[in-house]
Length: 185
Image 1: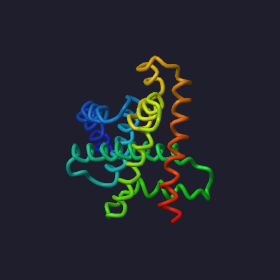
Image 2 (image 1 turned 90 degrees about the horizontal axis):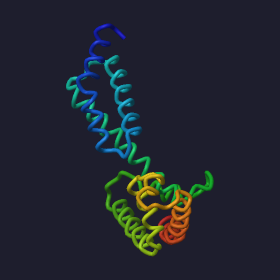
Image 3 (image 1 turned 120 degrees about the vertical axis):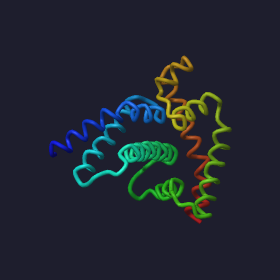
Image 4 (image 1 turned 120 degrees about the horizontal axis):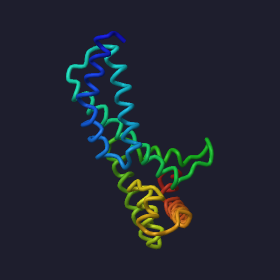
């Protein structure tokens, strides 16, 4: 990296670093994730200034940060579907169902399938005992760690893990019917 580009990079980090980290922290659950995302942004920025100039540095940095945050949330959503549908191997058709639910398309069929899935998920969650429903919701949808849930509820982490497991087993059973309707027919 040339001396000018190196200076530009250092000046940019000084100018935007603190505010950019604050922006990211407000949108993720913990400091470690925020710092990882910020590091990805700086890495991408350093790669970018080696290939060409960036017109509006601030806008570019915040756009990349937003994209990294969205990527993180998508990965979290995909892990929710992994928990519910499981992954038993490469020949598992349920991966097709998961792909359908997390698809980004906005065509009427995709919208309908997503809406149907979330309606059935909410109904299945409502059938659970409150303790199981709460643990599942807090861990999977609110992105709280088991330790954080333990601090909120006063329950042992192992008890919370067990409750979530029972919730996942129930949800798999209840959503199997929807899976069968959509994928098999």
